[in-house]
Image (cartoon, rainbow, N blue to C red):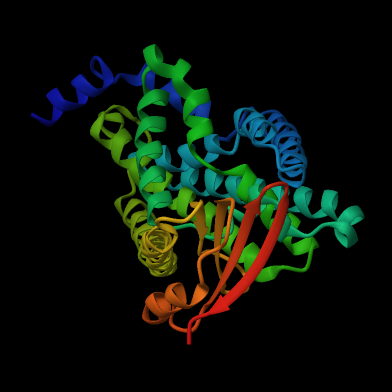
Length: 339
């Protein structure tokens, strides 16, 4: 039954030719180790440079370009492949290459940001900030991406989907973000970006090794199988997954709480504005100063703030309400506080 499943996943039995093809694609070893590593390092430095400038310029299009160029997924998938076949030498080789890639990407982001560190504020750049607070949805996406990546790499007929897989997983941009934030003196935010990368790394490793195992690469490989090496690698990956679940759960809880607060405040704001010449455009409860911003648009007399403050007193627990009112061609800003 297992062999039937493996053949269904792979599109046929896995033989030595397929093992050799995947090994040559993913694993860094002699006799072409240094030539392959030089190509990898060159592409990675270029991708990290593109990602750094895309992040600093707040350009999603440029960041996507960096994701396509970046080769960092190869050694991580190589590590997953090596774990699946239980080859300790390949595990160490691909692990070291991936660590070297991590260091290079962070260093590029750091060095390219230093010249403008004095005039750059990360809080004003959306593409930087969105990579500082990963949550459980990022882990779920990374797990699915690992499955898709291993499946695509192990089958020649779907290998053309790899650019899409590269875009789906976030590897080089968060590492470049770590370097950027360290150069800007924001180690706490840098730790959040590093957590995003580690989340993707561990998820790809676990799901990738699972797919390669299910496809039967272990049975077809002729390398010496080391069950202890495989067990150690899987144990470390699972322990890392357990550790990252803690901060991911906390950020997810905060995200859910903020979204719930926004939804409830939106309902209160709509009720408060009923019958007036204004309508509520948006609510933002995820602000650095702890206020809840309400953006409203309309004309005429603004309803009294007291009813809104009274109804939101328990909901906001002392947080401030800031109103941004677009009226005619002027912008009125007022503030109330729940007591």
